[in-house]
Amino acid sequence: MALADHIAAPALSMQQTLDDLAAEFELLGDWEERYRYVIELGRDLTPLSDAEHDDANKVRGCASQVWLVTETGPDGLLRFRGDSDAHIVRGLIAILLKLYSGRRPAEILAFDAKAAFEALGLAGALSAQRSNGLFSMVGRIRKDAEAAS
Image 1 (cartoon, rainbow, N blue to C red):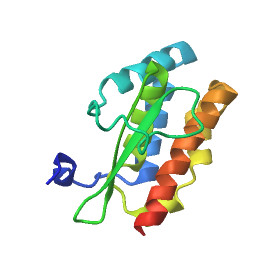
Image 2 (spheres, rainbow, N blue to C red):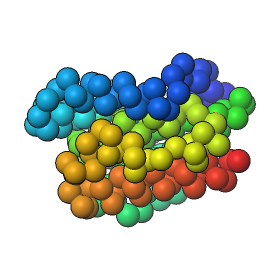
Image 3 (cartoon, helix red, strand yellow):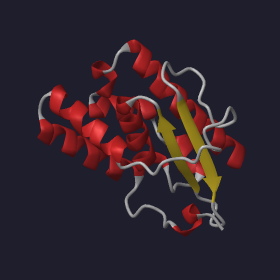
């Protein structure tokens, strides 16, 4: 049994998690501080194994190298793990994992990612290339949720 099978579902809803993240971002003030915080979030990601850095886990549409592993627990919850070769992207993955990991497929599919990123201020703070990559990651998460539902 994988370690992820032992992780409980998040206590907060996706909206509550988003609200908490937005409050944290608001406390930080300017985007330089927020970028540092996003990078710090990425440092806390559990590393993927060398074997998981494979083509099957690679997310297409990202300028950086991005890998996303999806696991379905016996409880039907989807758990995600990810990695990137870019510090800021690792942080964005960490934000996605906070929002999406440990959720039911229906909850994932009902969540409005675009509105979430606007609430966090990411929509205007990221370059077009990074925004496209972020939405490629969300697309992959949604595709895996659709397949699991």
